[in-house]
Image (cartoon, rainbow, N blue to C red; front, side, top):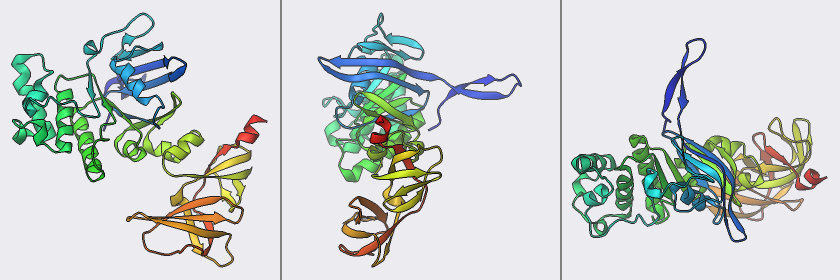
Length: 364
């Protein structure tokens, strides 16, 4: 999805594009009694962009979404939509006046209305309603089912109706709260691709909440990882995965094992031996991030590890080994059976690793 923006010219007359900010969240805070749900959150979402708020249950992502929608009033900070303040110390704009569309977990379709009637419900201009509904039905591929009731549709089709209903009034921002959680695993992958395509075709600016890392990485343009009410890192999926900002991001986004090590120039001395490190890392005592796909195993009777278990996943398998030093690491390999529990193996890392200063050294 390509973000839209406006053109500018530099001093040399070269024309460029500056993405227009649709959502600006600055220092946002929300508390419930003694609990801080949202703690000084900053977030910018540009026109046409799809951003995921990713984190474990209770991290503050849904509360952040509710604050942007206007369902809750923040205790601090400010929210701007299209450059206009909608929440601050002196301003609070009601949800219905924010031009915000929300897709709820349960879709919240009106069971007594047809698909077309559901989609047209929020379009206030009666003269334009039929045309707008028709355009949305075409967009989500449900023109042939316009007269059906929600209970006559599949879960994926209900999802598309919910999105069409939100898009019909032409909102400034679309908010989706765990939009795929009600779908079974077989449907989820296909439906999330459909949803992304629909939002992209509509040029919609969107934020969606999820606790599913695969969902966030595969759908979003950028992913904001939250924990304990804060955004720890907001980056494109590739950067987030390859260059996590801290241990939490490293272990929450994708599979990762941490090994102790000592930085020695461009190398790190670990229980696996010397391993190349990504440049710019800390020196001294460090924790090494090992992704399973970066680990290679070889049958070796005199190797330094023992195969403990194998988890077969169909498209691949994860082999867990215990190093002679006691630590455990995982390797993601092809699905063909190559190793068995109890076998001795040697372990190698096939690319430079990310490191973080160890907690002990960081506090000295």
